[in-house]
Amino acid sequence: MILVTGGAGFIGANFVLDWLATRDEPVLNLDKLTYAGNLENLASVQADERYVFVQGDIADTPLVMQLLDQHKPRAIVNFAAESHVDRSILGPEDFIQTNIVGTFRLLDAARKYWGGLSTNEQAAFRFLHVSTDEVYGSLSASDPAFTENHRYEPNSPYSASKAASDHLVRAYHHTYGLPVLTTNCSNNYGPHHFPEKLIPLMIVNALAGKPLPVYGNGMQVRDWLYVRDHCSAIRRVLDGGRLGEVYNVGGWNEKPNIDIVHTVCALLDELRPRSDGKSYREQVKFVADRPGHDQRYAIDASKMERELGWKPAETFATGIRKTVQWYLDNPGWVANVQSGAYSKWVQTNYTSRP
Ligand code: NAD
Ligand code: TYD
Image (cartoon, rainbow, N blue to C red; front, top):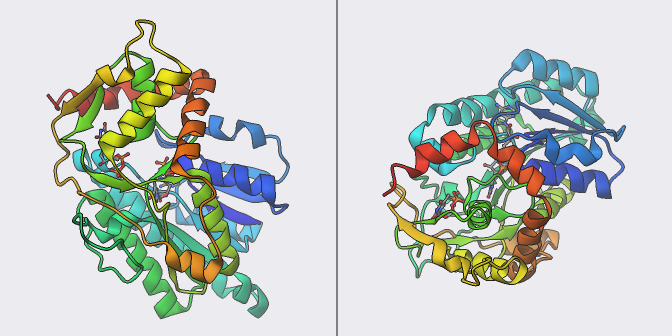
């Protein structure tokens, strides 16, 4: 079996669902269930005998050691993280704890477990660390896209904490020989995306008749990848990635934020028109910029294609349509994630942005 951490979050849940749909191998999901973890994402596999869920922290070494000894996974895929840049600006501590200390403790538990395996089991074992393009910092409009050799220049507490975790993963390979793989992916979008991030926030705010808050001038560029393409890339790296290597994953799809917001509005105008006949674009509101806002991310994913034959299956046009449709089809999911702590976050982040 494989151990997935953070499998109740956005990408982790999509990964678990796709894994169980395409493979026979069981999955153990270790997730702390922070505000971002949502077991409703996994309701369709809850009764699947190949799926086991354990609520817990990757930094809880006794628990992780017990799970490794009991379930004997042949791989660990580490999604668990604090993942939202704005939250890292307002409160970095949790990011240091989970992304740095948590990854370190998980690595160390994996090293001890791996050290006790047979030679064949050791050779087959993989620790795959899921990371982000944000560790490379910000590009100007004319810079080439990030390759795996780009210097690390993280600018937010989030990206700095992910950069630290990437370095620890590298060190555990170099020093102890742990068979690690790292993926650095661009911005994901798709079903089960928590509506604190740009695309789901715009969809749910638009439908609720609320303002669509665009930071600064909306000209910052991100490189968007449909989440299931990210999941297929991770499977590909797990199957065929070279040990100790880093793989950049992206959608070859750079767009300024304002274009993304306009695309979402246009799809909603078509699929769920406003009752007054006006466009959802009327709800766009430019608000105070994010401090230290990175201007541009862009991934050069050619190593993934060259070495592993991976390419995204979705274009942005097909992926964003599926995504908007998913939110329209799942109002219950949206209502559930918006109860509880969500409204407090929205108030904290947006009332300070005139
Ligand atoms: P998310 O915030 O939606 O989910 C994170 C999950 O991790 C949640 O289920 C949460 O409960 C769990 N978690 C948090 N702390 C934990 C801990 N200490 N122990 C166990 N579980 C814990 O995040 P996501 O968007 O799904 O991102 C998953 C991974 O992919 C992260 O490592 C992130 O850095 C990386 N990534 C995300 C993107 C993106 O666009 N979302 C892009 C590239 C890389
Ligand atoms: P986000 O989804 O938070 O991802 P990241 O910061 O990790 O790239 O934000 C994507 C882009 O959208 C980023 O440039 C910030 C911007 N943004 C807004 O303009 N308004 C918002 O309300 C949010 C959440 C993000």
